[in-house]
Length: 518
Image (cartoon, rainbow, N blue to C red):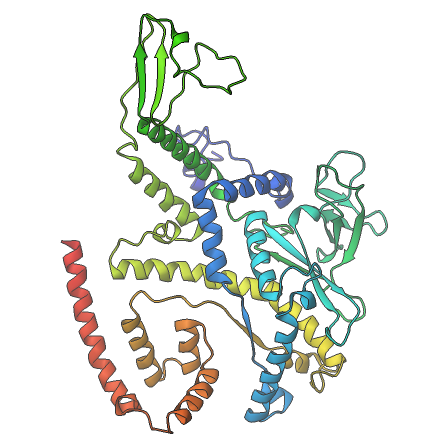
């Protein structure tokens, strides 16, 4: 019979008691995501402002993905553009300096004049995680001798990208009356499903005291150059999805319940910590000065009592006060919070010890947790670089070449040559080290055996730049009299020494793990 084969006898069964009441409904990305995004954004933002665990999840991503900012490292394909190694390195250094001139000045790159390019990266990431997506509107202003580039970035929060509506009612799906294109929550697509424009409102929905709304349609790409007018940062989880969903979406309910539970435990613990005395007397309570709970000018309610440190209350004849004697915090509080943190961390791809900033496990366990978290951090860093940093760098370099500040022959003539000039790598904060001796030792050995380059290891260890470190070390050695490095710094001696250190460290680590298990 239909429905009694395959998955009909498993997760799709309608007759098994365990699942027949599981009436799950799902529709298109518009129904599942766009229709619910307004509510999801408000709840995610409130949890970020009021739930410590939600705050930790967002800020842990911000600190590890962006940190002080993703730094440009030009990586041109010198064979395509026909440059020697020395010429390519000189071009890359000049371009990095020129980009830093624009990126490091908040008035030169931010349309609002509040953040430099690295601050805008943090803003884009946090807004993306909370709201589901974030938008950067690329504008052009007058240049001057202080600001040689016209490019400015205006960050737009998710709420302001919406489908135009008439009257008071909000719509997530609409249609452009001029060309017939569909509009999904402010994102206009053509007949092929490609994004062609964004619809931006002048204020936030239901904003108190706001000016009358003005809608602006902005093309996704410039018609004459193909360069982006809008950068859209989001994480897609379904085909035909044009708006993102909050990073906290799947954990809103447990985070909210945990917040309530924590607040109730905290309130109970505070109340139990009060030293409050209650005096029973046959005398008139009006003659006792202790029950003055209100303002001096206000009449006192004879039934009003206060709880607080050192508080004294006078009871009327025949009155008594009885308290329960619970112990706070409850015995299972820590275990329960840790259990919820593990589930929330699993959903957010942040191990619970990193989410809670509590490292009590062995070295091996802590390192495994950190490595697992960094898989997600690196993935989102690459997404941020691809959808935010690289498109903006492309617009900036196009302007720099057009203005003659950067020489890049063939940049506007051949797409292949253009792509070769645009090669970049965006360096962010390093993973950090639980045991610097072990990890630096391993990197030195990897370099000596050819498993890694010095540059890759430098980025991995501290996010630095190896070539600049070498230049600096040369100058420092000159100041020290030009002395040669010590014998232990030579390649062969270092390799042998490191092999011995690794063997010793491995033996000690095994002994430490065995003692922890015991």
